[in-house]
Amino acid sequence: MMRNDPIKHVFIWPAVLVVLAISIFPLIYSLTTSFLSYRLIPPIPPRVVWLGNYAMLLQEPRFWNAIFTTTLIAFIAVGLQYAIGFSVALALNARVPGERLFRVALLLPMLLAPVAVALVARMMFNPTMGPLNQFLSLFGLVNLPFLTNGHWALACIIAVEVWQWTPFVILMMLAGLQTLPEDVYEAAELENASAWQQFWGITFPMLLPISAAVVFIRLIESYKIMDTVFVMTGGGPGVETETLTLFAYQEGFKKFNLGYTSALSFLFLIAITIIGVTYLALLRPHLEKRR
Amino acid sequence: MSGQGLTGLSLWSRRLVAVGVLAWCLVTVFPLYWVVVTAFKTPPGVVGGPTYLPFIDFTPTLQPFIDLYQGIRGEFFRTFLNSTIVGLSAAAIATTIGAMAAYALVRFEFKVRLGAGFAFFLLALGGYLVFNNTLGFTRPQALLLAFPIALVVAIVANRLPLPGPILGNEDILFWFVSQRMFPPIVTAFALYLLYSEIGRLGFQLIDSYVGLTLCYVAFSLPIVVWLMRDFFEAVPIEVEEAAMVDNVPSWRIFFGIVVPMSMNGLLATFMITLAFVWNEFLFALFLTNSRWQTLPILVAGQNSQRGDEWWAISAAALVAIVPMMIMAGLLSRMMRSGLLLGAIK
Image 1 (cartoon, each protein chain N blue to C red):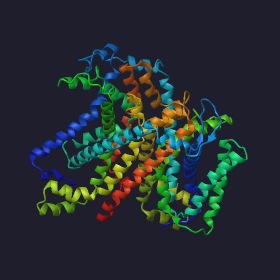
Image 2: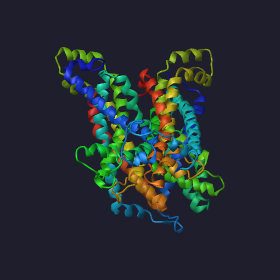
Image 3: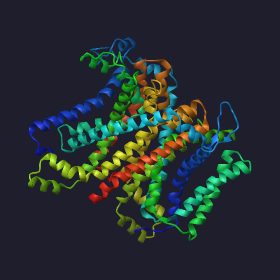
Image 4: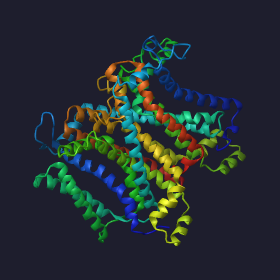
């Protein structure tokens, strides 16, 4: 039942006002700035260039490189997170021995500061003093260029992302698994369906909505990746691991190229929106079929 | 597969699954173990190559932590305090007003005309441009003038019979949650510019408690509203109806009945928000520079300042990590009681 009481405004307005002020203000501000040629160093008065900044960005190879790198990191990392996370959740749900102990440990990484995690990763991946180097040298692989070679560095960043965010997938999938009805499985058991058939016939389709939500959240969040890269490689070697957020930070905070950076962040916003909408559009037929 | 799913598998596959989970668990725990161990090593103990077991491989020392406390590697103590103060207050404020909004969205009916929303945005944008370019106000002044005007007009417009669709509670919720989709760099950068221009008018927001907390409150609100809505929906409405029959005012129903009944949910939301603020890097990077620097910034700085002094870096990372480890323990205990299940549907 919905009540109608004037006091509802007292309840909702503080939150709306704060979010409006902190999100709409900057939006308008940077939208207008993105049409200007506006630098703080050297201080030239702003000049209207309309879409000039956008055109310049779209011709900039560094921008496309950042988009490509970010997309690569996001898609591979989220794919791995989902595969590993779902498997572990299935195992935990099936009462693997020692399951209680695992839960605390498995939850931990997602609550830790990405900055600290990245520092730890730098230690682990240290090519001379790190434990990973020692472990791999058992197989004859000594002093691998973990963070100094572009491809290795990307792989390491992805590994750290997977390490940190798989717990989130585990948590959500576990919650989803616990809502599944028991009787469907009992019926499948009577029909002598194998565990494999049960998974693809029942578990996976029934968990499709929550899977879609989890992957969506992780994908959007992965596109914002910054702290991990900032600490682990700083975007290097060269710009080979530079993500969109990092690129924007370099342009805006190091060079104070305000108009350009605002345009960049708007292109970023547009890219995220396109990805989100495409994802939802691709998934919609599958989700509706199950209802 | 709920309950006893693995019984369908043979003994060997059961063992395989257990080994797989154990392997992932080791992958998860080993880096954490490594920081803890490294933080107690002496410099020669680190440079000499990897060692694993305290007292057997190397002799533990507290020196890295003493260095940290004495401020040799930056003002750790004050930064820790900053993080705690900003984290606790931002989480408390966000949970309070977010919970109120979530309750309003669950129990009261809201109608917003799409036209009014458009009017707000256009007026805010147009007003800003007019005030800034034509009337010669500075940019923050123009924004501050345009905002209330647009808001008032939008509220009035909402009462008029405008054509166009009417948005309900679900849409308002979606608006809240969609704020999380924004790349934070868009806001962080613009907020930095805005704050510094307001600073030029004499009200310092960059590197201040108010500026940082306000920004964190705004960015935690979407999660809070989303989580708390589910908790409030689980509260049986009969209790509230009974109270309404007795003419208890709505605010007393909320604070006296609903809040105590969903205390666990509030606590969990508070902790999740706290973790989010505690770990946040990008906004702190833009909006602070010395006095109100938070832990992630200082910890990230350890890397470049001193080169590979792993013993000290580990100690620094540990300071940032340990409070969240404790919280993970608390949260998982709440999780076991099925508390967080309601939040995910």
